[in-house]
Length: 179
Image (cartoon, rainbow, N blue to C red; front, side, top):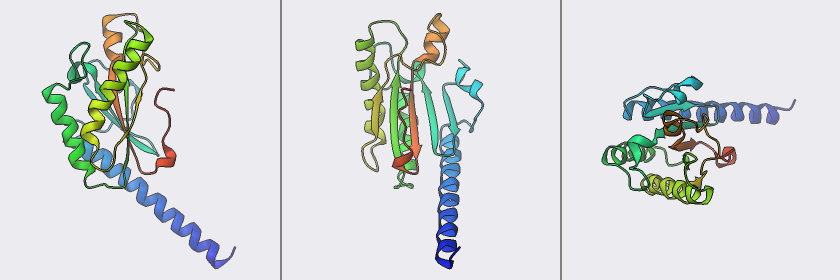
């Protein structure tokens, strides 16, 4: 291998390490600001007692907000405590201008798919409007696609109603949150 090839590999490793560090740092800062910790335990998303779940993958930080703390039934207006929490994330994002943000809304299966599609988009937009400190986030309404659990009980429907925020170091790593 040439000396130039070695330099490219070393620079790539340094960049990858810096991105990993930045995502780790962002995940920890977000979790602290929201009064929780970082949990990559998949069962955390299924715990009805957790209003917020922050996790980290190699490509992004994932923040899940439960619907009960976010919106009143059939509304896209953020509750005061939810607005406060989302604003905390926006303040942190100001320190990370390179971070690419995605926001997705999810509903349960009560009502038509089309109705829930519009509601999930409006809810994602409400959160994205606050997080638009470094450019407008990519938003996606997922209706009742990608349910965490079957929509067969009150508790399960509540688990499926959520807004998820994704923080990416690289736009090329963004994926469709609905699938």
